[in-house]
Image (tube, rainbow, N blue to C red; front, top):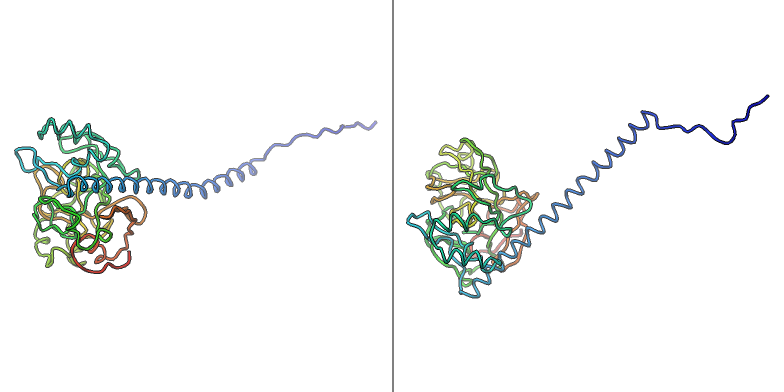
Length: 339
């Protein structure tokens, strides 16, 4: 007698080889998709960064509308020269931080400003692509900033008096009329990275400030336009940090010191060498007279920058040195190259 199996058939599962093939296909698809997701996220972060720079530019213009000038980047509030404020403090009312500004004005001492106002974490000063500073609680640490103001193409910093050729100076209040090259041809602000706050004597590129000495800086023939060879000599010397390093740059948005609230356009964005200083400083990075402090970011290929007319541009790392220096200089009278 013939036995009938009916219409039902035995179900068969995946073999091990088939399962491995499926897993491999899924892994390949994820590998193909992940870079696109990361690129989309970075594009969104870069757009947010641009918007923050735009707001900083508007704040500067609103300050100029009220007071007929941009604020200087140095206002001493304590007994020591380094107990001083950056211009960011005077932008607080124009960045929806009037309450914080009023607190500072009511208690305008170095102790209160340094211990309370500067320690306040403000989203307006943070780029979403940049890491947070590691040093946030020490005397010379703080919540961080990723935006800084351009003092020009010179290798001089902080104590250059009226020699700064940028839109912002330390001891002088600049006006729009001082920007004789035109506001659309002059840098106002760009990006910086906070220091690594690592321990020890070794610096971490591109985050920390590496110190040489003033010798190579003093030998620059034209301080307003350091040549490629002069910059390379400084950068190569700085790599060995013969005079030490500082890890707390870019940590205190309210402090005047260079690499905290200003940068120079002497070297191009994301310079291949470390941010370099001459003779070092009483409090941290960076209260000194000379330095190469280029803007830096973790955006692939360049940095965001706001020009003196309030427009925001993405400036690539491969901009020519001279074009970049001319862009930082408010009064060179030269025609800009393409960028």
